[in-house]
Length: 118
Image 1 (cartoon, one colour):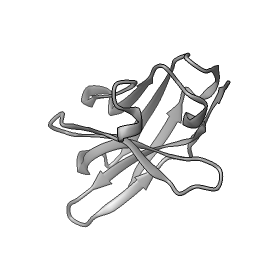
Image 2 (cartoon, rainbow, N blue to C red; image 1 turned 180 degrees about the vertical axis):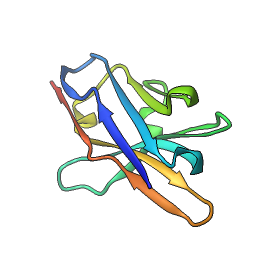
Image 3 (cartoon, one colour; image 1 turned 60 degrees about the vertical axis):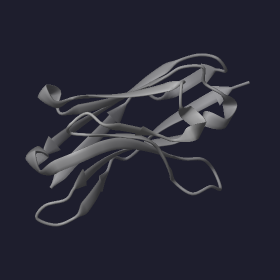
Image 4 (tube, one colour; image 1 turned 180 degrees about the horizontal axis):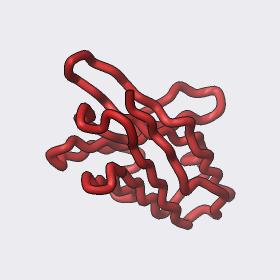
């Protein structure tokens, strides 16, 4: 089992910045990729960004150039630096960790709310 604990959400004005953090605990040796998803009211959960243990990153088109994902394997943590925030970035942000062996499992944090005011 893997447990994920997010922090760093809050209220910010449009154009501002926030940094989300997520620390993994438990069977962390089984984690391959980690990332961030978000879910806005009335919408489906969507990928924001993810990163593999080897350092490859992937971003949603809507956040490219504004958000940066980073991972600290020594601290079992993943971060999301969010700059130039827009009201449409308002959502609950969820940390995600993927285990691929011995079976595929998606782990989720409880989520942290990010609210961007116009």
